[in-house]
Image (tube, rainbow, N blue to C red; front, side):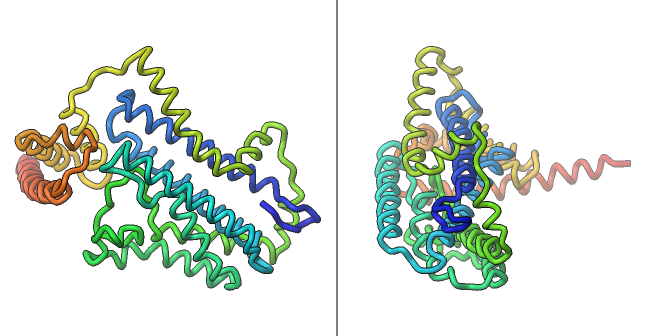
Length: 332
């Protein structure tokens, strides 16, 4: 990260922080790969601690985008370097979308972390001169926005990137503008506070320890690391699968496991058991389960899945109420 604090052109500790976030991201993606190949239960990496881990990683990345944006352009926008970097990130984001469209068409990445970084970097330029208190208030508002302003109007695919739809669109990496742009704004505010209080000068003097130098190297080449790490990890897990294949779990069991894991995040066990059994049985009866598990696109599939979700929710809520009533009657 280039800055003129303490007479240095680069704040190395920020590179270390970015490198640490990259390593954490690689750990998460390795878990995702293990799940995809069948070494972990379906739904593991999108629920519980893994889900929080993923959100913490995305938050740290985007926070550092805001910090870097302020430090690089606080006095004046260095358009040559900015546009070069923006073009690289945009091309990389497009490549990710194209690759995942062919590999995972039903969950391809149409607005993931790189797409967000490209858009947020451009939008963030408008906020570099704002006072810190206003930026922090804006960041809080952006984080809260999806909980307040989500509406069916934003359910159309053309508007999914905004983040105000009433459901989470299908994608293996979905980082919409809201609420995540709040992390970028918070990074800009923090960098401004660090500069105004003199903390930035002290941070610029910090030198990485020997064990941190690999992290600093990764942080300086973050885009290359991002593009290369997942193909390498997938290749490693593929080799493992050839040497020691995972247990063959039937599609209905894998779907039910994933459904139960995700459902348990917001609903009780009785509801989830009924809901997921209903969903799995309906897909099997309509001969759609293999299609859903394969990730191959099909027109009207998303609409039908929404209908099944509504029907099974109603059935599960009735069953859950009935069960709770029985338990109430059993109490002395």
